[in-house]
Image 1 (cartoon, rainbow, N blue to C red):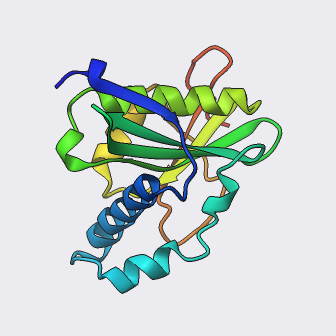
Image 2: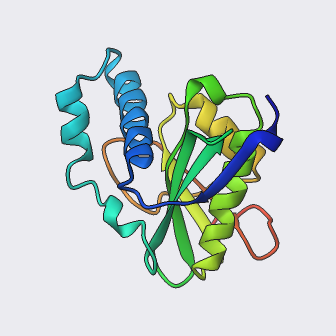
Length: 170
């Protein structure tokens, strides 16, 4: 499978495909954090009031990546202020990893952020999510100082969209 099979487009966060992708995302990150499978009830609780409704214009965007029409990936962009957008819920189903979609998804999310007026993109993640961290560094993101706090935030990245250069460290 090559990247030519991928289509990444905006989609409402509450369609059946987007919801299934968000559930898979939460299942994976929670299960890895807890080092055991997340239960359906835990996934439901994690998705309740998670702020996903802000991933609609003018405050954000939600994108779904499809391979041959089937849902394979998702990600969101949330405006934090007039200059910055945050990447969130970036996820590729395991069966589609290594097929070229991750770089396409990242580029589409950056384009969506720029379309919302952002000049920089930032994100936070955990140290154990090594695949995500590798994706971001391959995409030109550099570690930056923390711009927010939370129990599941261990490392922060940023990128300047104006020239596609990595974000300054300050």
